[in-house]
Length: 230
Image (cartoon, rainbow, N blue to C red; front, top):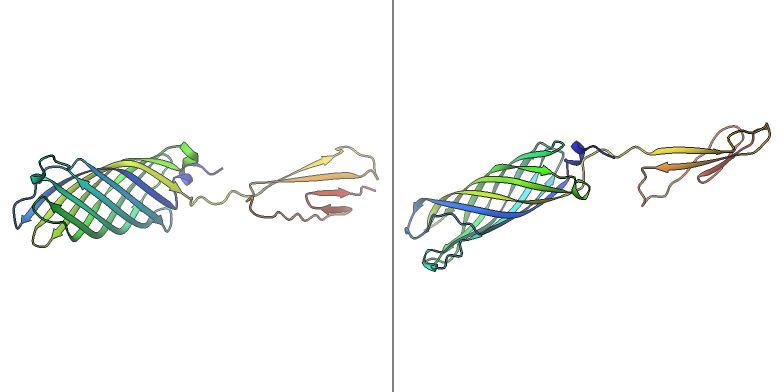
């Protein structure tokens, strides 16, 4: 089996988690946005890697403060894509990413409208042994976001997230094929027949195994060969 370090280098990561968003108005055209933190948020992303260290990420999030006093209610939702870099190890995988996309912002006073959003940040995953190393825990993800909303405001936002990561595939090299042979009987007199049975391991069960035998007096049929000892 591959070691934990190679298991940490997945080919695809799917992240699902909770998120906290704290928007701060940089320049406000109307002055009616509540800049307190939005505790109710969800976030998800899919990252596909070119190798153990670099890949592309697509991310989406939704935040709504669900304030009972709707006159201060605000919400943000959007999607982005960009580059992600990581450094996988046996137990932890730190990462950084830079994303660009669109963000919709709105409040009680104004309908949601879309604007440009730029995201930069990073985080840390703990690589659990669960499900044959296919589950990791995102201990934290911390991002800075700049969201430009024409005619409303420019927002500087801090986003904190945590959740679970489903890890698919591995960049670990394939395990070498193994072959063991059993001989029966183990002791013979000259001329007695000998049967050799081969057992191959670490094979892809979807593939068909082909055996080839060679040697003086050896005749093979699949995984079994007979040897004439005369």
